[in-house]
Image (cartoon, rainbow over all chains, first blue to last red; front, side, top):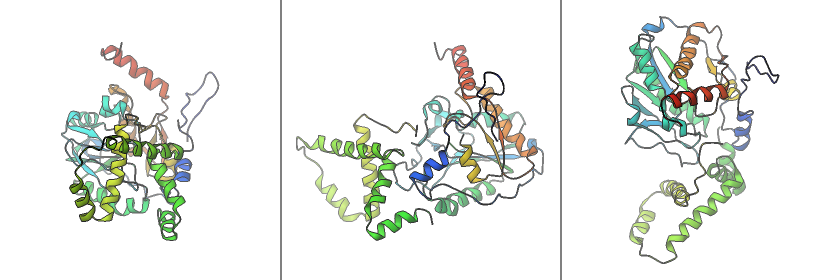
Length: 172
Length: 96
Length: 79
């Protein structure tokens, strides 16, 4: 799945920068990492991208300024989500997260929450449009069963109700 | 069930797994760093009290009396992070 | 970023980037790279053939960072 090269020439080195991450986290916090046995059925794209409404789902902890901060101190994590209006300017948004380096995102939010880029693609007609809101949560949630039962279900319902045809999801 | 091992440890009165989890949380996955963070928070809690300034004891006692245990425990976690931030030595840069 | 985590979670489609955490769409002010990541994902919507497929965008982190630094210098954001 990845190509690596330790010789001088040839394909660029594209290995995961932090090897063994799943094992490391699961060793420190047993049972906290998601491990699925089966693949979900692949849903085919039923219309051109230029007609699709896109929802973006992110664990970056990006949220509108003034909204209740994501809970970065709770020992078992935060299972809430925020709606980020897709008309938001990046200076109207802030990040509440402790588990990934945010220095670059603080300079250009699009490195982790590409709202400007997605708006441009919608304006250009590459995609049909955006949902009214994007959905965000944080990645520190140590109870995967609770995560699936509550947060994942809540977000799936919400983006479905917003009429999303496609969803782009990104961790942080 | 997720985190069942922690719930089992709590029920069995086995604190080691539980305190390890707390240290890992405070130390961003590094248990030794978490130990230091716990000590750091208590040092920061001690410092403003050395001159015995007036404090709002009524608020403190009222909060403890009227709030449920989970809220008070959550507050305790908030206070840890507040205090370590006051120390000026903030380790949570996201680089696990 | 975390290919092993992705393989355990088994999303229907995934694009893997060999980059640093917190940079899932690239580096600051590198608009073209940010768009390229998104377009790679959107293209995969149409071209994926089986659930669980992971595609790699083979841009080394050092290259992404170098390009980002050059862009910032051109924008006057960096000496």
